[in-house]
Length: 232
Ligand code: ATP
Image 1: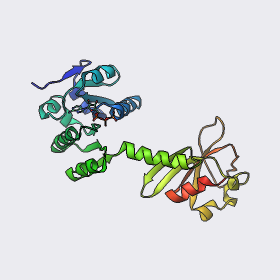
Image 2: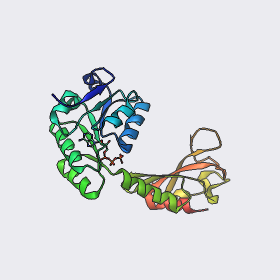
Image 3: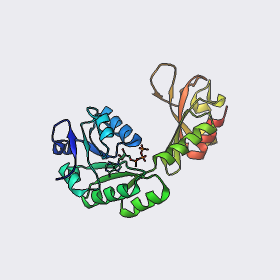
Image 4: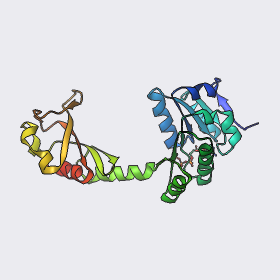
């Protein structure tokens, strides 16, 4: 008999059939991810080996279970092989992360996401065949570095050297229609949307006239988007 305790009664096979995600490892990253998925309407099976962690999330996820995810029998009893999407959010226990991920690969789960705490950890996960290896600390560190360097309010690396930047409009684009600013030709970026006061975000047109207090969303090659956001 597998060693696990299921909170909240109902059958985990049922949620495997719904649009649902299993999150294994409910530390800071895994629990934040699981709670955000719940907030967006996704059913979540949360699994953690630690009793207190599981108790702390009781009632906040569709199911939360204490189990050792390195045990194949435990995962099978929790219907984990039936899930289309599983996230392994175990970090510092690299052995547990790798053993768990190998089982999921053997189950042929279509979408496996696994957190890596270091480059070698990530390399092993990639070599095993995990398609989505995530580096939350490294990615957040890089993102914050961009914010700390400049006037950006937010920075999202889309990949392939493309970025979205939330920033204040520099004076060269204020007070005249965007078509007259020639910013795309001069700076290689596009201002895709803007927000004024309490109004919602609005797509820009060539006729949009920005004000100095607006907030804008700039899209472009990472270096160009960043350079544009440094203009005053
Ligand atoms: P975070 O930064 O997200 O808090 P971390 O990288 O420090 O996480 P760990 O301490 O390795 O992460 O693990 C995160 C969670 O995974 C912990 O709550 C831990 O109990 C759980 N965990 C570790 N090993 C197993 C396992 N074999 N089965 C199930 N859960 C596990």
